[in-house]
Length: 78
Image (cartoon, rainbow, N blue to C red; front, side, top):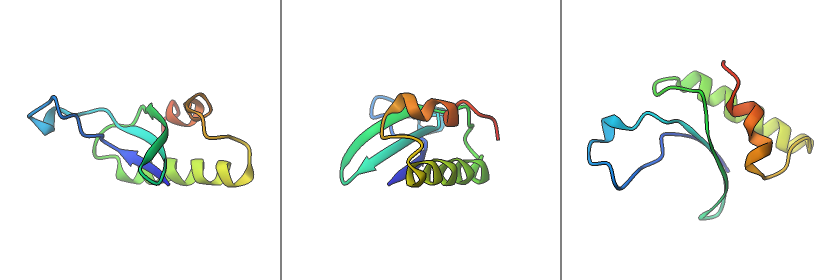
């Protein structure tokens, strides 16, 4: 599964202070890869576009399940 969103941080009580949007690859309950993106909270359309781009690249076999392979996607403004 591809997940794009703001990960929970149990050390921060004020959840409105969370601003980092992550891109994660999951298999079951395991996180295979996780990387911070240039997206900001509230960019739902852009997050969906990012997830679709990563999905297409994974299905095409042009990237694997490693964080360093997600970096070009995470660093691109949409």
